[in-house]
Image 1 (spheres, rainbow, N blue to C red):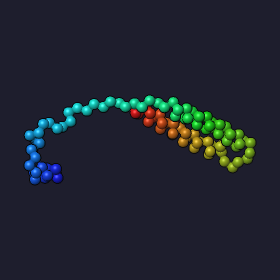
Image 2 (image 1 turned 180 degrees about the horizontal axis):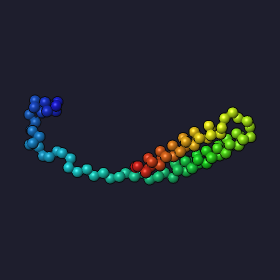
Image 3 (image 1 turned 120 degrees about the vertical axis):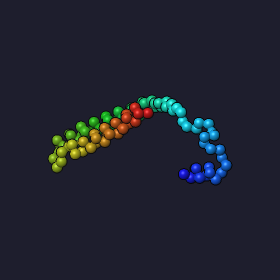
Image 4 (image 1 turned 135 degrees about the horizontal axis):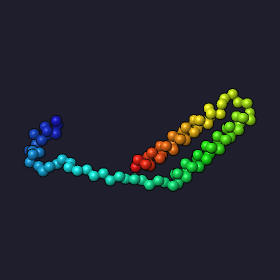
Length: 95
């Protein structure tokens, strides 16, 4: 609305007098980012540490009397690790 008002107030040529200014074609080149081996190695190391932690928690819960089940500690750790890993691989595949 304001663009038309400014055009009316100024003496610029009408859009019909100008060449075609509309987009006729859009070409999208997919920009794939290669996987980062260093990041994937870090993810693997983190999963090994999560597995060691799971084994340690299971051992502690069987060895000593604790008032909770081992999954109260292990499941959230596994869930957050799986979520972070999935987010990385979905982001890498999407790019």
